[in-house]
Length: 106
Image (cartoon, rainbow, N blue to C red; front, side):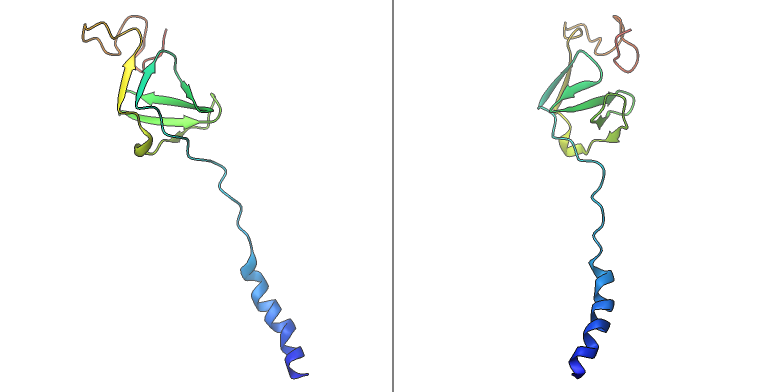
C-alpha cells in the first residue's frame, strides 16, 4: 500500500521530461552536381533552388524560388561552376554579355 502512494508522485515528476520538441522547419538540400552549368538563376536541382553569390563565392538554397534562403553547407558546393554563354575562352567568366554582377541575365 505504501508503494501505491508514490506512483502518482513519481508520474508527476517524470511526465514533464517526456515533452517532444517540434522538428526544425527546414531540411538541408542535397549536394549539387560536381559541375554546375549556370544559365538561369536561381539554379534548380533536386527539388531545390540554388543561388550563387559571386561577390563572396557562397551558395544559398530554398525550396521556393522566392525564399526564404539559407546558406548551403560547404560540403554540398560543386567543384566547378561554368557559365553557358561564357565558355568561349575569352576570360570573361561572368561579366558582360547581358549579365549583371551576380550572373543574372538582364
